[in-house]
Image (tube, rainbow, N blue to C red; front, top):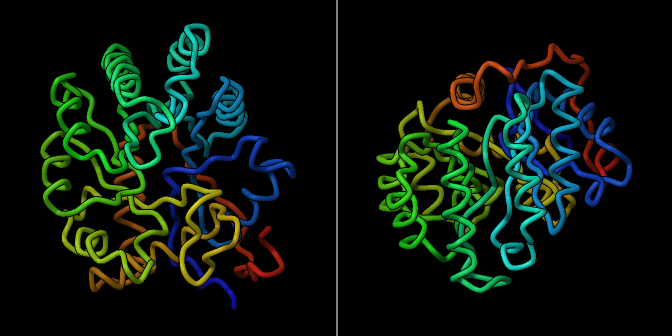
Length: 285
């Protein structure tokens, strides 16, 4: 099965391209994405050490069509020592870092104690306000605490993105009221993701984004493969279907929204105009 051609420039607003996930390096992955019309990338650097954050910033410094986001994922909250947190805070000041994150709460896996997750989340909300940069929020099975801490920390001063949106319309309304955009990943293509699909169909047109969260959550019809930025065309096509719009319209909307949210540092590439690749041969499993 071939990927549908992208009708207009697209921005993948959340992907992980550090060496831990891409032993082949980012160049081939970015090229495959550009061949299907993806022209901008928000590369997220999180992990048990600062290495992924350093790699994301280096990639953004080398390519004008990439910006970085750095943070401490809730899974790593208990293992991140002061040196780690301090380096992330230093990197967050780099002009090629557009956002702080992903940070937040994950009560589904509980890989770090919840109290520690909340402590780290508070710290990075404060960092985003100090840097005057938007937040990228990871939230899973923690809707009430996520919203409470965003309110407590005055996160509305900087706003941001609810990445990989997986909640319902009530949460979406509250997040929108706090100045957060809603970013849809491959989850929106899953057959049982009815609440997410409802929000994707309903959300204000100027507040939606698309992402891959690669290497995770490959969309249908590629579920089970290692996800990569080229696959965002499938997510975009599903959002267009749900909204009763053309993929070209949703590409235009989400690109405008991404450029507004992530700032002038993100300069979409012209990119090659080759035919879309066959993911069975052109994308790593």
